[in-house]
Amino acid sequence: MKCHSALGALILFSCALPSQGGEFDAEHRKMVDEVLADTVATAAYTGSSALSPQVVAAMEKVERHRFVPPGLVALAYLNRPLPIGYGQTISQPYIVALMTDLMKLKPGGKVLEIGTGSGYQAAVLAELAGLVYSIEIIEPLGKQAGERLQTLGYRNVKTKVGDGYYGWPEAAPFDAIMVTAAASHVPPPLIKQLKPGGRMVIPLGSQFMTQTLMLVEKHRDGSVTNRQILPVAFVPLTGGH
Ligand code: SAM
Image (cartoon, rainbow, N blue to C red; front, top):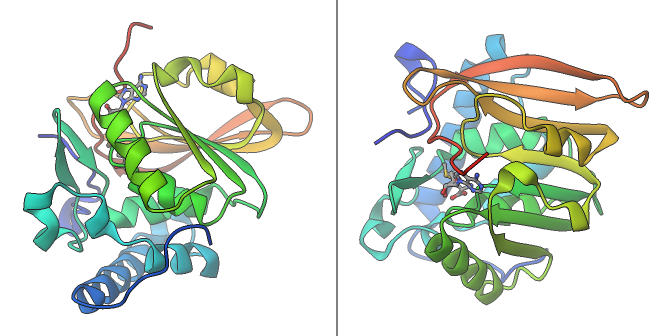
């Protein structure tokens, strides 16, 4: 199964309920420390050896064991992607942190995520943004993630089932957009739905090869520039587009 990874030898393979503290605290701490270590190790690619304190705080707060299938709870704090059913994955924590950091979210901002999956990335975004919209194409996954986020108290996340290639025009424009599945190109509807001054993070490339995580910036004058960030491996963006 394909999942997020990067970098050959390194192989990167206040809104919600408060943490109760307990059995996973040590593993959670270790996971965040590994994310910070990967951030340093990949600085030559990403241009940054540190995450923003807000992103670190979100990674410390959101409990990943609440987003994995019951049989994988013991593995929830490994810095690795894990299967969530339907051939899909919950992303590697380092990649979640990196993609979140690249978006440079501001409090109160409006964000669109394509690929809700387990809802974990949406929860991390919800700690930093005012409102998160997230679209999942696989109905059972989308419904389950929506219910999970509600149960966990994320009132600032709206989810829907559909093809994220077309974005969420009724809620546009967005300050930032994150695509968590690999696309062959940047979907034009998503560029359109990005605010001037906004940022999009998206893996580009074929599902059978290493892809490239891209930072797409839409400037105040409407022009768009792309920057390559890191080699990655994501599940493909599907749908009829
Ligand atoms: N962000 C997720 C999380 O935190 O668990 C992980 C995302 S997983 C790597 C990619 C997800 O994108 C899968 O759940 C997949 O079904 C979904 N997906 C693929 N193509 C899509 C599309 N066109 N629109 C919406 N979701 C899509």
